[in-house]
Length: 553
Image 1 (tube, rainbow, N blue to C red):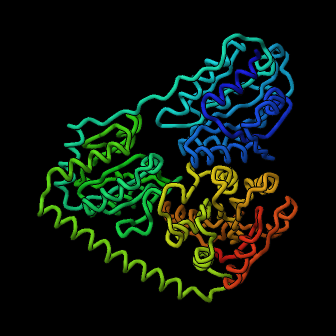
Image 2: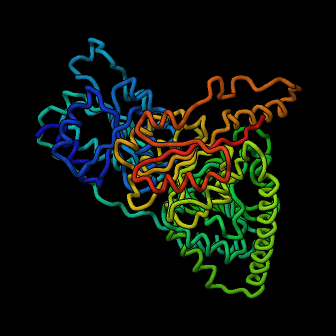
Image 3: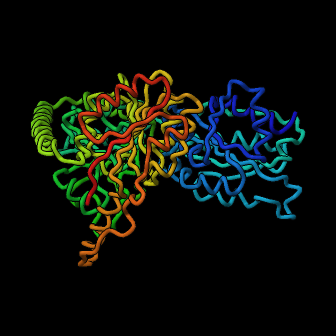
């Protein structure tokens, strides 16, 4: 058999059921073999970044390893930003790129470069088989590394001659590996610390949600009367957002995080990176009086950036379930009453907060162009039934988190790492993973332009995504950050915002969508959003709605 056949068989052995790619000449050994493997659908992208973004979100949505197939050095370069996002999101992903025949290596052939070195900084592992005999063992290693916590992308270069070389070394799969289990003594210590706390809080990353532990998180928050936050950028529903204990995301600077956590004497960190700052602060994230417990499924993340009083390693769903059992084994009437009192206070505070938000919405109801909060509110009232939200609304993300109900894992997907363009590219993968649910992808106009080619892929594969572009015709987040920069560095300025407006000319999203086979329209009146959504829902394939909203200036 040949190396290319071993490659394809390796994908099947490891449960791969989708490939996202941008074809090229050095990818012919893979593309030609797809004809013999109809169980491996290939989603075509017009840009390598779109292929990786779609594959990363597909892996997040399914929990299975996805494959992105790129084209040589320039194609790999095009995808580096999305590979960075996949690394930050801990997406189990195999990224490949066709490489020139190794026998041409010393002749500096067209499009050649050191692909392994290019990919190494944004992957967990980067390698190239030197012979067809190495294909099976190397793929086995790649899948193992991609699926070891913390999960992440792995890169494999595929030289043409290696793909077509003869070998008698077959594809192989190591099989499932049992997850670690947290020790009972450690869990007993954690339960004791929680029982002693007068004001606990949870700070959540994505990992517990990925392990379907939302039920355990809710039970833990209610049992302890804990306030719940999640890390600033998230890929998943970290906690049901209508729960009264939920208080949204943490800020992006240490001093603001420290202020947020100041009322708490115990901080329980669960499954994530937690604090990713944009601005430098000398202060620590956690107040001095607070003790810290961290639960992770890998030793790698424990105390990585925040010192802990207790670190717990083990599969999170099991560990949290056993922690709850420990808490319930030692009933304390006084503690239960205090937890109930905290829950009641949080419920009342939640009621007040929601009333204030409704009042703000009312005050902005007649603003023209419409305020982003009004646009998001109207969208939330007209979503398709059982919709999945893919969010890259950036400056409207808090409004999306407030107005759109997020109950279960799989209801929401977002980009990690801060690189933009992930939203509409990722929607391709999320819709492919959820053929029975309608995906609504919400993006800012600036973000959308980074991967606008994804509209063609949606039309080409008849994916019924509703793309919603919130057009403020500016890079609004950059204007906010420039204000912060000027204030932090005491730069008194009445200067305008340089090069941050998306005008002259104004972007025409329905026109771009129509050119790629996607019908679309522009809405400027909030009363027109519901009708536009009805037209989108009545369309079998993809549809685009551009909503013009107010900007910062």
